[in-house]
Length: 104
Image (tube, rainbow, N blue to C red; front, side, top):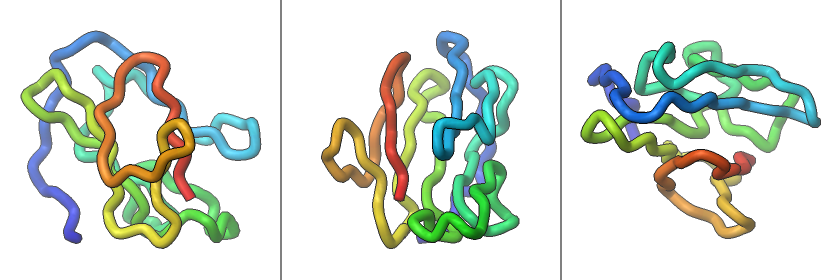
């Protein structure tokens, strides 16, 4: 799957997104201040990089994007180990306050 090139802005409720690894925050930002789409993975082209030593995360693992200005969505972009919400593997998940997604 290719990465989306269309930049979209967020017009919904101001949320904070946090990427944690081993209990430590490695990226964090207010949704209103981020540029979408936002890629997560080990490759240097990703906006939110995961250390290359973290082998459970693919080079291009997931992408956060905005739909209709008010829906924040995370989707798997061809990762090896998937994304999970409440233990269930998903290919795409709408994000709302309090939702925790596990990657890798």
